[in-house]
Structure formats: C-alpha cells, structure tokens
Image (tube, rainbow, N blue to C red; front, side, top):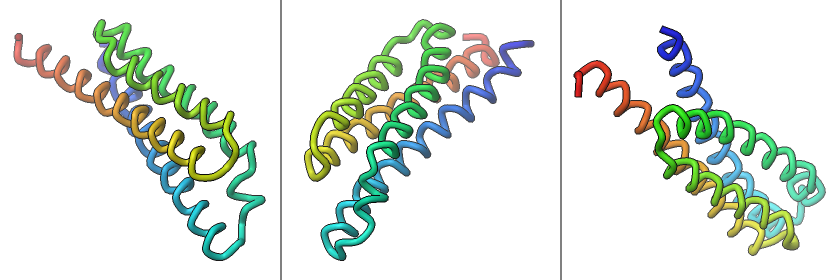
Length: 134
C-alpha cells in the first residue's frame, strides 16, 4: 500500500528532472545565441550562481528519484547514467563560459534526463509485473 502512494511521487520527481534537464539545455543554447548575436544578457545568463543552483537542484532531484528507484528495483543503470551526467554538469562549472561549458552541460543534462527516463521505464515495468503476475 505504501509503495503505491510513493510511486506517483517518484514519477513526478522523474518528470521534474526531465523538465529541468530540458530547461537547462535550452538555457545553454539561448545564452550562447543571445550573447553572441546581440551582446545582451551575459551577466544574467552566464552568472555562476545560476549554474550552481541548477546543478544542486538536478543532483537533489536525481538523487531522490533515481536513487529511490535503484534501491527499490535493484537496477543500477538509471543511477549510473544520471550520475555520469551530473559529473559532466559539474565539469562544466570548471571550464570558462562558452562553447565548452555548453557542450559539457548539454551532454550532462541529456544523460541525467536519460537516467530519469530509464527510471520511469523501470517503475512502469515493475508495476506491470505486479499487476500481470510476471
């Protein structure tokens, strides 16, 4: 009974993680385009705190949702993929702003998003097995 109440929370966290990853990728691309094309918004879009806060949020959401799924279903792949993505995102904080940072961040958020997608698939397949008796 408790597990049925928890699954919607995990699903929401995974979906929030996917949304956050997509928003981060859009932010990276738009930042480079706007600053390069128009020379505006650099102080806002490239502010280090924006990236640090995004990494903390991504780490918390992934840690809870994907870590929870890994413990519950004993499947490491979503966790490993997401943590690899978070490592890329962390590495992006160590390079100067620009193309290198954007590439590392986009690789990172793609992997974190993939981790959430894999986690959602494992939740779905586990629920099906419970219902179908497999």
